Image (cartoon, rainbow, N blue to C red; front, top):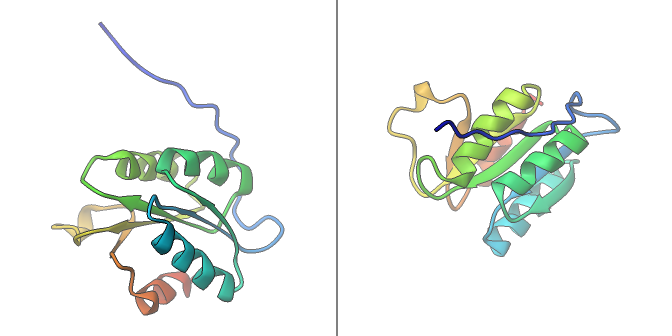
Length: 128
């Protein structure tokens, strides 16, 4: 038996109408802190609680950056990040996680340890 899924993806280039960011985190405190920091850096920020919810926003808004929470390897945040990298290659994907990646060079996304060091986040944003 073969199982599969499909996604309707509205793919737009990033940055239409200014600098946009998406923050997906089920921890309201961390989500609000990241959103506030990004807004202070000049981003228009949209927030949701889950990674898969973020995919819709990424497609609709074409953000320059999206921060997704990863609790465990291969969880919703990890899967959403992988899909976002494939569907929206112009959006920089950053995962926030409880621990650093064991092999950071093998990941197509940046992983920042929680609670997120805002100076490290700023370094990630400098090239945008």
